[in-house]
Image (cartoon, rainbow over all chains, first blue to last red; front, top):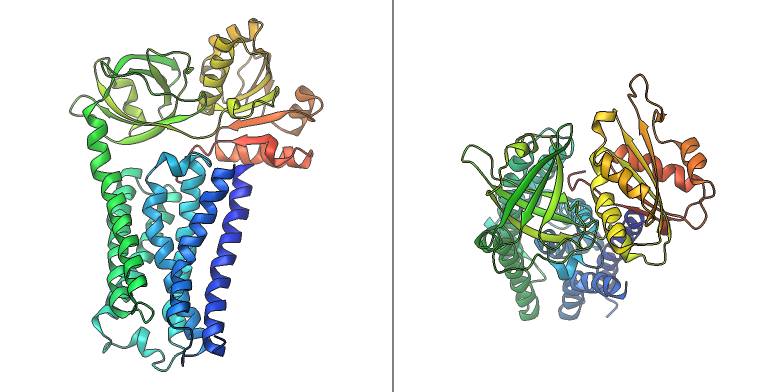
Length: 33
Length: 439
């Protein structure tokens, strides 16, 4: 059913977006690069 | 669904692009971790918000794999997500050296003021969306507010981030920012100003307005002279803007197409009087015109040719897309088996009653109809009450191998989905159309 799929996809997207922002912050903060 | 998957991946990659560019340009910082998270949130929310007009503008190449109802639902979810990020943005930045003066201080640079105003505009927009969902605002009023606050927000966050953003000091990000903002504004102008004028140039003409049941009208529209009727699938819907007598409102609304695509002289929608606008639909006259933007949606049995044993469950006017499919099956002499469970309040509310029974009396499709009335009158021989687990079991028998098409009020559809799931029907066998974009 498409609504459930959409909710899963959106939840996954949100996790990816938030994680990416956190990872970028972490890289900068820890001066990894 | 590869096209859908690719579009989702593209969306994710584009939204994350500024994070990559920012990381490449300036990988190290002297700010705290939370401060940097706050900056990352702002970059993502800018991209998400600039995508919003693109999602809401009904472009076929975006909508096709998902259905417009799903794209609009995504637009709403992402608006809530972006709001969360933008509220977190100043809170996280306040963990930096300047502390809470970023939020409460008055001696901040002018682009920061624009950022503060942007958050107020965003919250106001969310407030009106909430009021709209609760049904306390006329749709047209909400739409005008949304059309004002949405673009205003985009302008504010663009100027704020362009002049204040710590990560926007390199050429690539400046270019990406200007491009995203330019596309968002252009798409908005096209969707709200240019396209309606283009559609109005070649309007369809009303050729018949017929009463279908109590407060329900079928409006037939013929394509403009020299033009072919647009192609659609049974079960899809169209946006119509009627141009009628001067005292009648001119508003755009979407309705399911109720006729079969095998009928090429006209396209019809069957409309129930439920609101301020639809209560005037019976006053539409042959000779009136309407601009048509269509077709949309993926609620169609022809998209699932492997399904041969269908159960249609409709509530009230939710019958229209299913009627389009049944008419199409009849014209195509389809061998499909269909059980229709049709819920209404009273006998008078049953739409297409005579034609439904004509189809059921024919050989193809093999249609069986069960009417269920919640306020059955004296002498009603059929089912009464609501469509519940017992009735589904009684009439469907085994549910294995069956596909379900649901259309009607949210409460009815959600309730049926719960029943079907408890009976072990897999989600990919349940098809629904979200009738309202508001909820």
